[in-house]
Length: 122
Image 1 (cartoon, rainbow, N blue to C red):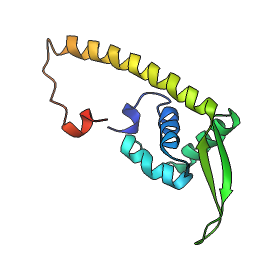
Image 2 (image 1 turned 90 degrees about the vertical axis):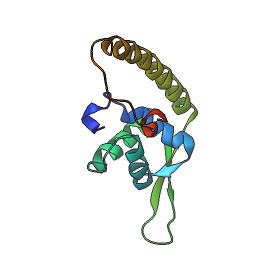
Image 3 (image 1 turned 60 degrees about the vertical axis):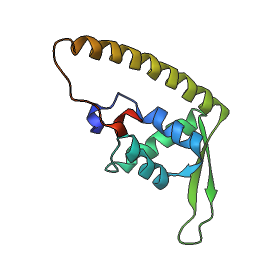
Image 4 (image 1 turned 30 degrees about the horizontal axis):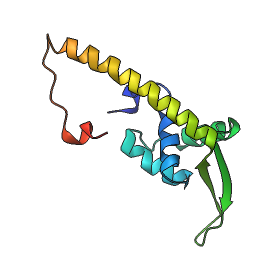
């Protein structure tokens, strides 16, 4: 799936989810976002989002010393970020229900290819 096919603003809940899993620096998040369908082509987009999430109080950051190179900023989810993540996950669950209804009705007319096991695990 290309980034163009992902829901609008889908990166936001994805970043919150990744930070819920563990605090991380930007490069790590950029790498881990690829498993959720994002490319690494626009790192500026991620860093702009991280700044916005921090401004909104959803993430906090601090400088972490590095043994091999410059210090790095590490991001972690705040309580407000966890609440926002939960709300966005609930909204996505509702969207999934609507998509399932649409696809079920559509497949009455046209057979769609089966999803691969890796895609159903997402």
